[in-house]
Image (cartoon, rainbow over all chains, first blue to last red; front, top):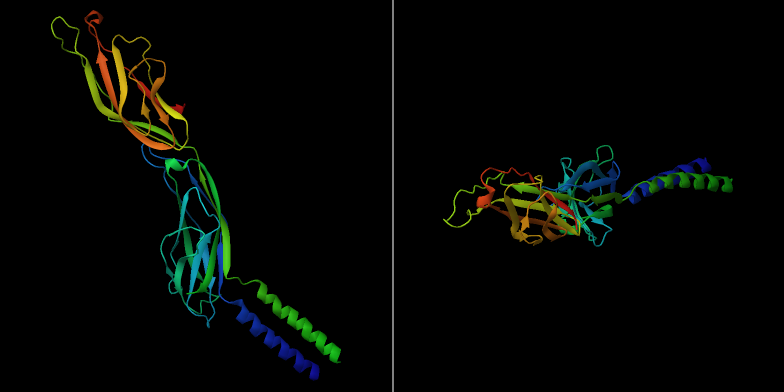
Length: 153
Length: 159
């Protein structure tokens, strides 16, 4: 009797701690992205490259404050411009903050993320990346580690 | 008994805590931007005709000129130039061309167009540029009448 009561008590306490410590969650789906700029009309700047293959997914707890998702890169001085926009945000799960020019400063990407965005129906959006270069930028490549963070708004 | 109870509690605690590892408030992926070499040149204004049909008495026929066409270019590489050449190996009459109103390079001196590529615009590097194609057709009385049809080719190439 004594052993059984002690075990149930500890198991329940552990689950509660796990849920509280879990917090809001964000993840990137469909891996890495490659954008290639390779053409230009004569007499004009190179054509930009776009990619919408990846999605962002997030959840929040029912006890959470309103959240936001920020985005930043690890590249301090990029050779070419890179922007990202959260498009097709799932209804009721947040609002796109519009196009963001990536920098090493965290910028708002999705705002007004409510509490209670559950695992069973996570918030989602498509990540629309756009890379641009001018003729003066020359050739080469930038490799960005793009980080998304869900935090209190 | 106490030891047994403590062991069970420890095992349960370990399994319970494993759920903490999977959640994260950050996520990242790699986004790579590649820019390849781009070299483009184009003519605007279509084909042209230069007609020599007058002369002052006692003087050679008057030249015919045309400046209705333009050349445009884009390169994201350094050390480039634009050359000009004709497909005519032995034209009857003289055709010259010079780049005027140049942006994104430096005009070379006026060229007598031949089937050998000659410098037309130099100092082209990581730029978008354009110029007017200023043609001059000339003939002497001794050359008689007739016509030459040139296919004039402009090439963006390494300097």
